[in-house]
Image (cartoon, rainbow, N blue to C red):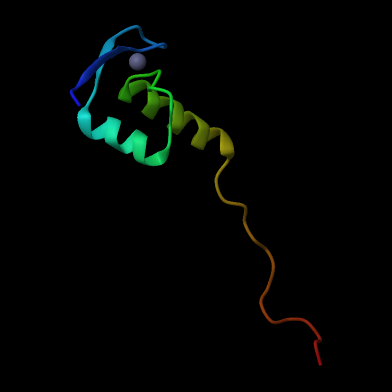
Length: 68
Ligand SMILES: [Zn+2]
């Protein structure tokens, strides 16, 4: 295996799909090569996280029920 140069779908920059990453992809069973450079992948990820809206403030109190 050797490093591969791929072209990012988002920013059109070339990026390296390293041997290690290829092995990782194989191990995970991914058949497709990455479409985006690491930067764009990171950007997408953090975007998704932001739109998720964080933690819900769980207002449920513990052990308040009349179980017995
Ligand atoms: Zn990119």
